[in-house]
View (cartoon, rainbow, N blue to C red):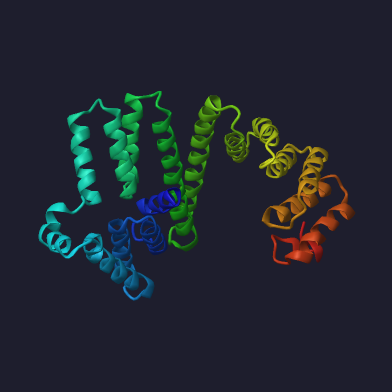
Length: 328
């Protein structure tokens, strides 16, 4: 849940009034038991859309939960009287108070990596992605060998890019200056890919047998057009039974990008042999198998794979046009 919340928080860092992200963040914070944060998200969402029933109902329900919490914790009548009399003094600190305390602690101990990390964690929880990253940067500078800090910083930075990409993609499709938004979107996607390559290379150097990391690195290298390097990573991640099918598919994509259609066909067939399920990945496998066979000038073989998809999902990509002779 925390990683999902981080992604929505990153969107809000770029687009503070994004209604869907505010509601999703409110729901996630509520599920995690952070009622204070949840009601703040919903309150912000209500300003954007005052008539939304889910938002108004959530604010009402969470407010009630917050108000009865001290009563639920009182086991006797005497406890209840005590809770009502001293509730203000014994109430737990709000997130804002915790952040304020952490800021003060970091300011008083500027060479304490732990203090900066704790501040980053709290800022992250509060949705302040930029300041959280700055705190993690400070912490990693003080403790460059602390992998936990580096992992937190890396994951949050990727989430930060994701938020910017979502906002830019929305502007590109709905905004007035679409050309500028598209340029921003392309720039963000490039910067994210470059960061991921550096980040996952660093992680795979530390954990060379972690196939999930190698798979992620392969994907980033592929997006950057560095197919030879991507091939090497996917060849490693294919050894993991959990990622063998996906790795075979991406190896096929890499070989296609390199114009080696015969090798691509072998990898797509390997993926099909491992699992012929027509899920989203299965459809992609057959689709690109068809494209690879077209590259091999095997139109009859290619058509069989396009027809396999057509029988399951007529709306998948441009398969209908291909079958009708209107596509590539």
